Amino acid sequence: MKTPEMKAGERIYNVIRGKSVDRLPVIEWTPWWHLTIERWNNEGLGLPYGIYEIQRHFGLDGIAWTGFHPRSRETSVAPHHGAGIIKTEKEYEAVKKTMYKEPSAFYDKEYFGRLQRMRDGGDTLAWVAVEGFFWFAREMLGIEAHLYSFYDEPDLLHLMSRDYCEWLKRVFEFVGNTFKFDLMSFAEDMSYNNGPMLSEQSFSEFLVPYYNKVDPFA
Image 1 (cartoon, one colour):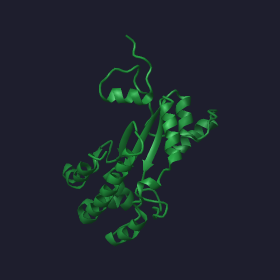
Image 2 (tube, rainbow, N blue to C red):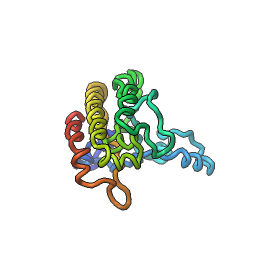
Image 3 (cartoon, helix red, strand yellow):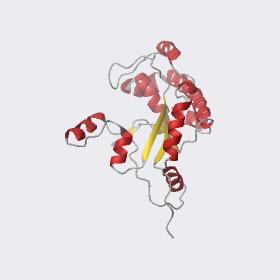
Protein backbone atom coordinates (compact mmCIF):
# COMPACT_ATOMS: atom_id res chain seq x y z
CA MET A 1 0.00 0.00 0.00
CA LYS A 2 1.45 3.36 -1.01
CA THR A 3 2.07 5.82 1.81
CA PRO A 4 0.14 9.08 1.28
CA GLU A 5 2.24 12.15 0.44
CA MET A 6 3.73 13.62 3.58
CA LYS A 7 4.77 17.05 4.69
CA ALA A 8 8.52 17.59 4.96
CA GLY A 9 8.35 17.64 8.76
CA GLU A 10 6.40 14.38 8.91
CA ARG A 11 8.83 12.77 6.49
CA ILE A 12 11.97 13.58 8.46
CA TYR A 13 10.22 12.66 11.72
CA ASN A 14 9.35 9.20 10.39
CA VAL A 15 12.78 8.58 8.87
CA ILE A 16 14.53 9.35 12.15
CA ARG A 17 12.25 6.88 13.94
CA GLY A 18 12.43 4.14 11.32
CA LYS A 19 8.80 4.49 10.27
CA SER A 20 7.37 4.33 6.75
CA VAL A 21 7.61 7.35 4.45
CA ASP A 22 6.32 8.28 1.01
CA ARG A 23 9.93 8.94 -0.03
CA LEU A 24 13.24 9.76 1.60
CA PRO A 25 13.94 13.41 2.43
CA VAL A 26 16.10 15.22 -0.12
CA ILE A 27 17.93 18.08 1.56
CA GLU A 28 21.07 20.18 1.28
CA TRP A 29 21.63 20.84 4.94
CA THR A 30 24.52 23.26 4.49
CA PRO A 31 23.97 26.27 2.17
CA TRP A 32 25.99 27.06 -0.89
CA TRP A 33 28.77 29.64 -0.73
CA HIS A 34 27.92 32.97 -2.31
CA LEU A 35 30.70 32.52 -4.88
CA THR A 36 29.04 29.30 -6.01
CA ILE A 37 25.76 31.14 -6.56
CA GLU A 38 27.56 33.91 -8.45
CA ARG A 39 29.21 31.38 -10.76
CA TRP A 40 25.93 29.55 -11.38
CA ASN A 41 24.23 32.83 -12.23
CA ASN A 42 27.07 33.77 -14.58
CA GLU A 43 26.48 30.41 -16.27
CA GLY A 44 22.79 31.16 -16.71
CA LEU A 45 21.01 29.99 -13.55
CA GLY A 46 19.35 33.37 -13.13
CA LEU A 47 18.21 33.07 -9.52
CA PRO A 48 18.58 35.54 -6.66
CA TYR A 49 20.91 34.64 -3.83
CA GLY A 50 18.21 32.99 -1.81
CA ILE A 51 18.78 29.54 -0.40
CA TYR A 52 15.08 28.80 -0.43
CA GLU A 53 14.69 29.70 -4.12
CA ILE A 54 17.64 27.51 -5.08
CA GLN A 55 16.32 24.60 -3.03
CA ARG A 56 13.05 24.88 -4.92
CA HIS A 57 14.89 25.10 -8.24
CA PHE A 58 16.66 21.79 -7.61
CA GLY A 59 13.53 20.08 -6.28
CA LEU A 60 14.84 19.71 -2.74
CA ASP A 61 12.87 19.73 0.46
CA GLY A 62 13.13 23.29 1.72
CA ILE A 63 14.91 24.22 4.93
CA ALA A 64 14.06 27.31 6.93
CA TRP A 65 17.01 27.97 9.23
CA THR A 66 16.76 29.72 12.58
CA GLY A 67 19.97 30.37 14.48
CA PHE A 68 20.85 31.67 17.93
CA HIS A 69 24.37 33.04 18.41
CA PRO A 70 26.02 33.97 21.72
CA ARG A 71 27.81 36.95 20.19
CA SER A 72 25.85 40.08 19.30
CA ARG A 73 26.36 42.94 16.87
CA GLU A 74 28.13 44.77 19.68
CA THR A 75 30.71 42.00 20.08
CA SER A 76 34.15 42.46 18.58
CA VAL A 77 34.73 40.75 15.23
CA ALA A 78 37.80 38.66 14.43
CA PRO A 79 40.17 40.52 12.08
CA HIS A 80 40.29 37.57 9.66
CA HIS A 81 39.09 33.99 9.25
CA GLY A 82 40.68 31.73 11.83
CA ALA A 83 41.53 34.55 14.23
CA GLY A 84 39.92 35.00 17.62
CA ILE A 85 38.37 37.94 19.43
CA ILE A 86 39.92 37.29 22.87
CA LYS A 87 43.17 35.92 24.29
CA THR A 88 42.79 36.12 28.05
CA GLU A 89 40.15 35.78 30.77
CA LYS A 90 40.26 39.54 31.30
CA GLU A 91 39.45 40.13 27.63
CA TYR A 92 36.66 37.56 27.82
CA GLU A 93 35.09 39.28 30.83
CA ALA A 94 35.14 42.56 28.90
CA VAL A 95 33.58 41.18 25.72
CA LYS A 96 31.13 39.06 27.71
CA LYS A 97 29.14 42.22 28.45
CA THR A 98 28.10 42.27 24.78
CA MET A 99 27.16 38.58 24.63
CA TYR A 100 24.44 36.18 25.75
CA LYS A 101 21.46 38.35 24.85
CA GLU A 102 18.00 37.23 25.87
CA PRO A 103 16.75 34.63 23.35
CA SER A 104 13.41 36.43 23.01
CA ALA A 105 15.24 39.41 21.51
CA PHE A 106 16.40 37.48 18.43
CA TYR A 107 13.08 37.01 16.60
CA ASP A 108 9.67 38.63 16.89
CA LYS A 109 6.18 37.13 16.57
CA GLU A 110 6.03 38.09 12.90
CA TYR A 111 9.11 35.95 12.20
CA PHE A 112 7.64 32.89 13.86
CA GLY A 113 4.37 33.53 12.04
CA ARG A 114 6.16 33.41 8.67
CA LEU A 115 8.00 30.28 9.79
CA GLN A 116 4.74 28.62 10.72
CA ARG A 117 3.20 29.44 7.34
CA MET A 118 6.21 27.99 5.51
CA ARG A 119 6.05 24.87 7.65
CA ASP A 120 2.30 24.51 7.16
CA GLY A 121 2.86 24.71 3.40
CA GLY A 122 4.26 21.21 3.68
CA ASP A 123 7.49 21.38 1.68
CA THR A 124 9.76 23.07 4.25
CA LEU A 125 11.56 21.84 7.36
CA ALA A 126 11.90 24.21 10.29
CA TRP A 127 15.42 23.77 11.61
CA VAL A 128 16.99 25.51 14.63
CA ALA A 129 20.75 25.51 15.13
CA VAL A 130 23.22 26.66 17.77
CA GLU A 131 26.99 26.48 18.03
CA GLY A 132 28.47 23.47 19.78
CA PHE A 133 30.99 23.87 22.57
CA PHE A 134 34.03 23.19 20.38
CA TRP A 135 32.80 25.58 17.69
CA PHE A 136 31.94 28.29 20.21
CA ALA A 137 35.36 28.28 21.86
CA ARG A 138 37.10 28.28 18.47
CA GLU A 139 35.16 31.37 17.39
CA MET A 140 36.15 33.11 20.61
CA LEU A 141 39.85 32.18 20.69
CA GLY A 142 40.70 31.52 17.05
CA ILE A 143 41.69 28.19 15.53
CA GLU A 144 45.30 27.86 16.70
CA ALA A 145 44.86 29.40 20.14
CA HIS A 146 41.78 27.27 20.73
CA LEU A 147 43.67 24.04 20.11
CA TYR A 148 46.41 25.14 22.51
CA SER A 149 43.84 26.24 25.10
CA PHE A 150 43.10 22.65 26.14
CA TYR A 151 46.58 22.67 27.66
CA ASP A 152 47.43 26.36 28.16
CA GLU A 153 44.07 27.88 29.21
CA PRO A 154 41.89 25.10 30.66
CA ASP A 155 40.28 27.36 33.25
CA LEU A 156 39.29 29.92 30.62
CA LEU A 157 37.89 27.18 28.40
CA HIS A 158 35.75 25.85 31.24
CA LEU A 159 34.62 29.34 32.23
CA MET A 160 33.40 30.13 28.72
CA SER A 161 31.71 26.75 28.40
CA ARG A 162 29.88 27.19 31.71
CA ASP A 163 28.57 30.59 30.66
CA TYR A 164 27.59 29.34 27.23
CA CYS A 165 25.91 26.28 28.69
CA GLU A 166 23.69 28.39 30.95
CA TRP A 167 22.76 30.62 28.02
CA LEU A 168 21.89 27.62 25.84
CA LYS A 169 19.49 26.40 28.51
CA ARG A 170 17.65 29.72 28.22
CA VAL A 171 17.66 29.42 24.43
CA PHE A 172 16.13 25.95 24.47
CA GLU A 173 13.57 26.95 27.07
CA PHE A 174 12.51 29.88 24.89
CA VAL A 175 12.43 27.76 21.74
CA GLY A 176 10.44 25.01 23.40
CA ASN A 177 7.80 27.48 24.56
CA THR A 178 7.63 29.40 21.28
CA PHE A 179 7.72 27.16 18.21
CA LYS A 180 7.73 23.47 17.34
CA PHE A 181 10.81 22.95 15.16
CA ASP A 182 11.28 19.78 13.11
CA LEU A 183 15.00 19.49 13.77
CA MET A 184 17.73 21.03 15.88
CA SER A 185 21.48 20.73 15.59
CA PHE A 186 24.72 21.78 17.22
CA ALA A 187 27.19 23.22 14.73
CA GLU A 188 30.47 21.42 15.37
CA ASP A 189 33.62 21.08 13.32
CA MET A 190 36.10 19.06 15.34
CA SER A 191 37.52 16.65 12.75
CA TYR A 192 38.77 16.63 9.18
CA ASN A 193 39.91 14.05 6.63
CA ASN A 194 42.81 12.89 8.82
CA GLY A 195 40.81 12.49 12.01
CA PRO A 196 39.65 14.46 15.05
CA MET A 197 41.34 17.69 16.13
CA LEU A 198 41.30 16.78 19.82
CA SER A 199 41.88 13.67 21.88
CA GLU A 200 39.19 11.54 23.46
CA GLN A 201 40.51 12.67 26.84
CA SER A 202 40.09 16.35 25.92
CA PHE A 203 36.66 15.69 24.45
CA SER A 204 35.55 13.92 27.64
CA GLU A 205 36.94 16.63 29.90
CA PHE A 206 36.02 19.82 28.07
CA LEU A 207 32.90 19.03 26.01
CA VAL A 208 30.99 16.05 27.39
CA PRO A 209 30.10 17.63 30.77
CA TYR A 210 28.44 20.60 29.09
CA TYR A 211 26.61 18.55 26.49
CA ASN A 212 25.30 16.37 29.31
CA LYS A 213 23.93 19.47 31.03
CA VAL A 214 22.33 21.11 28.00
CA ASP A 215 21.03 18.10 26.03
CA PRO A 216 18.07 17.46 28.38
CA PHE A 217 16.87 21.01 27.66
CA ALA A 218 17.06 20.35 23.93
